[in-house]
Image 1 (cartoon, helix red, strand yellow):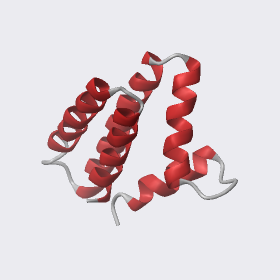
Image 2 (image 1 turned 90 degrees about the vertical axis):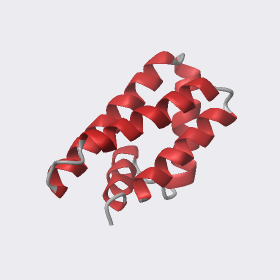
Image 3 (image 1 turned 45 degrees about the vertical axis):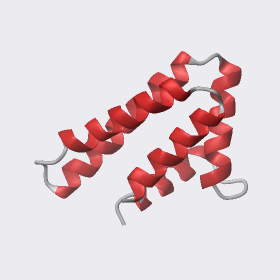
Image 4 (image 1 turned 180 degrees about the vertical axis):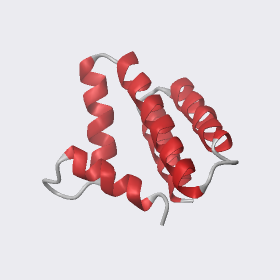
Length: 100
């Protein structure tokens, strides 16, 4: 699944930033996002997983000082966003591809 590949990418970025513990925690919790949505219909599951993952990412950003949070966001965007693509557009486009 593309969602899982995206999570692996973010996990690798976090590990590369010296945040292996947070990376491992993200991997475990993102799997829990998937597991909690297993009995839902497809649309509800996709929404649930996206909201769950975005909550995990918010918690990670909140653990970091602004400089480190900015670096993480920049690293993720460099891998996923198009040149001059606004953050919100990139995030929506990337999340939409998780399910295709």
